[in-house]
Every structure is written in structure tokens, then in C-alpha cells.
Length: 335
Ligand SMILES: [Mn+2]
Image 1 (cartoon, rainbow, N blue to C red):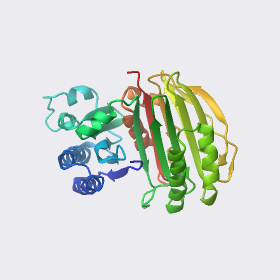
Image 2: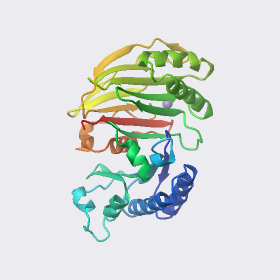
Image 3: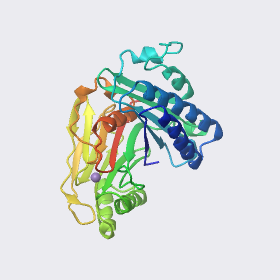
Image 4: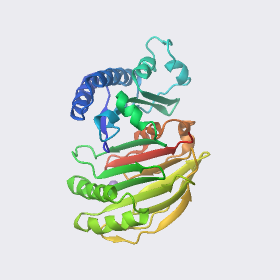
């Protein structure tokens, strides 16, 4: 649920490999047979598009919930060439006869949820979600749109980054943690932070951080941020320790949220900072495996798209290759 699988698609031989990896993933997560078939078709279609037309293409999959009926998300990411009039290319019945974007209409029809972003020079990002009917009903009450990419350093089995989004009727809490270094010891620290979060999610952001600080003493330590939001008025209590980047984006502006120096489990004097999360604004948290030097102006209109595409595009363009990398993007829905 928290970790994604990245599959680079440089040529058509990688498409079959991606299909096999995905088939194993959907079988392991217990996705029903019918949806497994849909996912295979979507991965093939998106993979072929990347192999034929795209630069730096990759597919990224993740489970959307702890249960099989939460469904699965498939992201297709590249750095170009990108194309204009993407909505027209996706529209039913439109066929460009073997040009980029061909086949996106079919992917949309196979998906429960679908969104696409493309701009000349910025590349293309496609989100396809396949969710069994039971899962759709359960998700109908969600007030947050959540996008995330969280992957280990290449060659590592375990991911030292992790994240959680929890919401109930009155509150939403976002958490992102980066265990120091990478590999299994980093993953152990991150897993412990997630365990503490899950056991204490009724508590304040300050209290969650304080408890994590105690619990992580026996680990390698971590940097971590928790953003607790009162959904009645959008007031945010943000508590961050160490190098987790956090911001709120609205009206094309990025407002940074402040973390204090330290390492959870070793030295941490957590402090809460207050912000306001206005409806339709997007909160973005990322670990230091993703550069923070992005500018929204580089990606015209991306902010209006599903947060999965925001997370995907930032991951595609700004994740380094020296550390685990995670980025969490969440929009607070007005409806
Ligand atoms: Mn890191």
C-alpha cells in the first residue's frame, strides 16, 4: 500500500517484463481475476506507448488500500516529447493512427478513474486506477484525493521511506518518514514510525512525534513530518523533524512549512507550526530523495490534475538515484 514498484520502459522488450511483474503484484495483493485482466491490458497499452514514443518512460504501480478491493493505481511517466490537446486525443473515437496518445481512450474506458497530464517540453503522465466495485463504494466518502510515489533506492528490496494518510469525519493526518540511510535498517526505523503513527493516530501531531521519538531510540533513527488538519476549518498543525520538505500550494504559490533540525529517535525538540489548508489547495510532502528545486511554472496546469499526477511528475523529474525517494501529494476536495 505504501510502496510503489517502478518499471522502466526503454523498448518493447520491457513491456512484457512489466506485464509479468504487474501480474505477480496483482496476484499477491489478491486483486480479483477480472480486474487483473484489466490491469494487464492497461499496462500493455501504456507500456507500448512509452516504448514507441517516449523519453525516459516508466510505469509505476501501487496498491490503493490495505484490502484487495481498494484497487490498484498504474502511472505512466515520461519526460517527453509530450503533446498538446491531450483531452482531444483521449476522447472516445479519436484515433491519431499510430501517434503518441493513441490508445489512451481505450485505457480510460478500462479504468475506474483516469487522468492525464501532458505538455510540450514537460512530458506526459497518465493515471489509471482499477478498483473492484466493492472498493469504489467504500471510497465514496473520501474528502481527500491522495497521490503518492514511494520507492527504494535501485537495487534495494526494502524501502526506508514510508507514508500514511489517515482521515475520519473531523480530521486528516498526513505523515511521511525517511529512515536514515537506506536498506533494511532504514526500513526498520520507518516501519516503527508507521506502527507508532497507526497506534496513536487519535493523538495530536505533537504527541505522535513525541511518541515516535521515544520508540525510535532503538533504531537507526529517522526524519519525519506529521500534518494534522482540522477538516472543519482547515487549520493545520505541522510538526516536522529533520529534512522532510513540506508545502501547501494554492493559486500557483508554494508556501513552505517549517521543520526543525534533528533526528527522531536521537535529538528532537518537536515544535508545531500553524497553517491553513484552504479547500482545493494541494499539500506536498517529500523525502530528500526528491529534489525540492522544482518550479510550478515548469508544468503549466499540472495543479488542476489529480494529485497522483502531481506526485508522478515530480517523481519523474526530480527523484535522484542515491536514496529512497518518496513524494506525497494530497488535495482537499470541496465536494
Ligand atoms: Mn533519505
